[in-house]
Amino acid sequence: MADKKVFLEKVNSGYTFKGESYKIGCAMLDGEVVSGADVFIPFKTLSRHGLIAGATGTGKTKTLQVLAEGFSEASIPVLLMDIKGDLSGIAAAGTINDKIADRCQKLNIEFKPEAYPVDLLTLSNQKGARLRATVSEFGPVLLSKILGLNDTQGGFVAMIFKYCDDNKLPLLDLKDFIKVLQFVSDEGKADMEKDYGKISTTSTGTILRKVIELQQQGADQFFGERSFDVDDLMRINNDGKGMISIVRVTDLQDRPKLFSTFMLQLLAELYATCPEEGDLDKPKLVMIIDEAHLIFQEANTALLQQIETIIKLIRSKGIGIFFCTQNPMDVPASVLAQLGLKVQHALRAFTAADRKVIKQTAENYPETEFYKTEDLITQLGTGEALVTILNEKGIPTPLVHCMLRAPQSRMDILTESEIDVLVSKSKIANKYNEVVDNKSAYEILTEKLEEAAKRDEKEKQEEERSKEEKKSPAKKEKGFFDDPTVRSMTRTAGNQIVRSLLGVLGLGGRSRKKLF
Image 1 (spheres, rainbow, N blue to C red):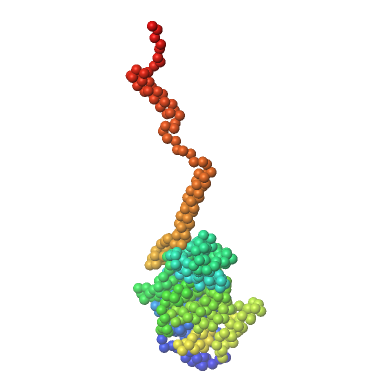
Image 2 (image 1 turned 60 degrees about the horizontal axis):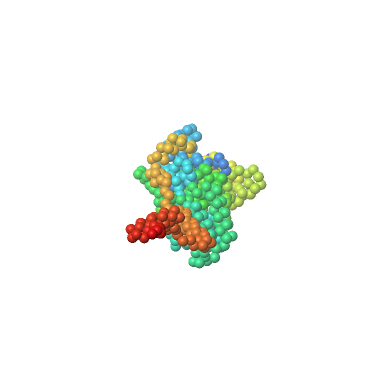
């Protein structure tokens, strides 16, 4: 057996920090909680990102909930991606039971049932504030990466954006982009090529197919107005607690491309909008992404590079990102290397492939004299995890087998009526649920094409009339006296007038011979 005193000293020296921190549990040795071996998370290093991993049913979601509660209490806003739909209970106070009471006693923690300030957000028609972004905000580079375009096709997308900027054609939703794409490939092709270069029919066809593929995953619901302001994710309520924004994306499990599109846009928007902050005492925002494998599931190489770049750089903006997934190998190695905090719940070894993953996972953690990591990973109980964190100097803390505290909020979902009440009290739901349909590229080009069609029809009619006139000889236009009836009446009247005048002069009538 390991020396408990040496173990306690190692834990206390490794998990004692100068700045603010949050107790998540106590270290365990030989399967027992070691009294006084408290495990804290320093807020200063949260922007170094983190990973919560483990098999189904091992307590990942509850760990995620505990972290969100602790951050909120420290006035740190939290953004949660709720894939399974089981995080809304954070908005309601929890209840204590025998298991929770026993755990709190072992950890020397007082259980305080509490509801936390929550805003529900949605990408679809679920209840909550709608999250949207315009195509223009994506920009040509990000849109090309999402669509998986090559350099030539990406260059053409950049041309389209430039053309729209120069001609004041706002790109708000996907139908705007499709309309412009069709226009520059047909009616507007000559003007486009004159000012911006040749257009490849093959490229336009490929881009159109890619956009339609994105539409089929429900992207039309995401692209549009009103655009979400990331500042609304960084709010503190009147009690000084950080707002917990829960994005309910339960209907996106079978639409990973849309989910990765949203996530990449959100990360890019946060990076572009937030100023450089350096190392803050605590982050401005912590984002926790449940079922994180959905981001990487259909990501191409360019998209993965973009995510990796943003993860590396967004730390300087004071933003921390935590990935929650079943298997740590779901996260690309280049991204995994950027994650400073690791909470590893139990993994199951049913196959040779599973054992290989467990061995690789164990090798990613600091070496320890107190545990045989590879074996312990499969033996962790529910609500227990292997934990290591970056300290304030950026050095990994000792690996500990930790019993984690229980959430103080409800470990279950809200009812529909509770959700209705929560949404009705939201300060941002009305703002983002208002339907906005500004005049954009689709309407402008449609009007332009309709006017052109009317002009073409008018010119066609004039041309046909001109042809008819050329085919038939010119006819003198009939006057009033050209009518036969009028001419006959005129002659009769004229004869009567002449005879009357001649009669007056004695010249009228026939002459008769006189007999002498």
